[in-house]
Each structure stands twice: as structure tokens, then as C-alpha cells.
Image (tube, rainbow, N blue to C red; front, top):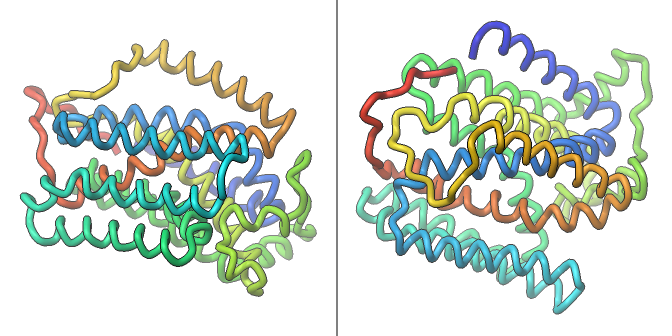
Length: 328
């Protein structure tokens, strides 16, 4: 990442930090409406181009079927069909099955990779059996940390150290500061009150807490700090996925995506058009648009499970004949 881009990222980080501290619900809602869909599209393309060659045909068919099942569950939820707890439990089971789909490759890459796959499966089974709703909320929170793993896999040498240091500040250190009560320090520094309202029909901070705070913790004294950190973390997730990963590209691997993506400019135009349409939908009915967006978001969030398992497990893929320059 060049000096100018680093400064721009730092300015956006500072802006998001102050905004989340002073108006967490507005920050959560506006960032979701403006950048949610574009970050889903950008990440799916990046993951397909970077990792598509590491997934064989059989595993890919299994992953695609499971992801379609998860999307279908979210779509069914829009119509209010079936029991919500049962739907969430089935989604977690499908998520655990994603780890099973890549288990053969994980076993070939040693005990660490296999152990991580078993851990992912165990967490999914535990969440499905004990507290599906709380487990999915926790998954939504942790999902925003995945750029750390993607950057660690993509970058090498000094670029990795610099990149992970920058990412750790935005994705770990600053959210932790907000969890520990930093929002009040920001309010005091600016002489402003913390807004607890939200846009349109989203309601207040108390109404928005379930998006990122598991049910058993909703009444905890630090629940609002946790939501504030999550709203900021969401912004940082978007910043990395939209502003950083596409610039890095597939790197030194032979690009073998499973899907046919349009050329970059056509892709960008399509993403902008879809984003404008969804933003208008959010303005008209935020709750309904968020539920519809969740169908697409669930696919990109769950695909990260097998992808990161393959990345940590050292799954290999054919290298490009001419390595591309490192960008960080």
C-alpha cells in the first residue's frame, strides 16, 4: 500500500472510529446500505480468483450445494416459513458441512489443517444444538475479522508484516478500544452526546443490539460498547475488502475461478448499479432490505469457512507462469 493510500485509509479509519463512537446505529446502518452489497461482490470475486484452483470439482459441487441451501434458508425466512430456531440450526449444520467438504484436502495437508477442520465442525454442531441464534450472531461478529486471515495468506515477507500491522490496528486494536469504553472518551473529546437513535425504522441502539450482540449478553453493561465496536469493525471490513483486496488481486497463483466474472470495468459498473438499487431499497424499508441482503451476505460469509481452512492448511494451487508484483 503506497503512502498516499495509507494516508487515505488512515483518514477513513479515523472518520469511521469517530462516527461509530458518536452514532453507532447510524454508522452501522449507513455503511451497510452503502457498501454492503459491493463488498459481497468484491470478496466473492477475490476468493474465487485466488482460491478457485485449490478446490476440485467434487468439493466445489458440494460447497455450491451447501451455499445454495444456506441462501434458500435465508430466502425462506423472508417469507416467515417454518420455525426460526430450526432454520438457524440447519444453517449452522450446513456451515459445519462446508468444513467436511474440504476435509480430504485438509487431511492431506497434515494434522493442523485436519484439526482446524474438526474445530470448525465442532463449533457449528455446538452452536446448532445449544444456541443457534446466539451462534449466528457471534459468527456475524467474527466474520468481520476474516480480512486478517485473507491478508496473511495473500501477502509475503515485509509486505505481510506491514499489511498485518495496519490491519491489526483497524480490525483489532481500535475495536478493542471501543469495547473498553472508548466511545465515551471520544464523546468527551468532541463535547458531543452519543446518539442512540437510528435512521428510518431501525429504531434505537437497544433495538439494533441483536445484530451483533448474542442474546445472553444483551443486558450486559458493555453490550452497547460491543455493538459500537462491531459497527466500526464492519466499516473496517468493508475498507479492506473493497479498497485493498481487489488491488492485491490473485497474486502469484494461476487464476482458475469457478464462476465466469465480467471484465473489471463491467464488473465495477454492475456493482455500482446494484448498490444504488439496494441503497434505495434500504431507504424505503431498511429492515426488509437488510433481510434480503442477508441472502447474499450469508453466501459470502460462509464460503470464508472452507477458504480460510484451505489457506491455513496450506492447500496448494498451480502458480502463475509469470509471478505478479507484490502490492501492499
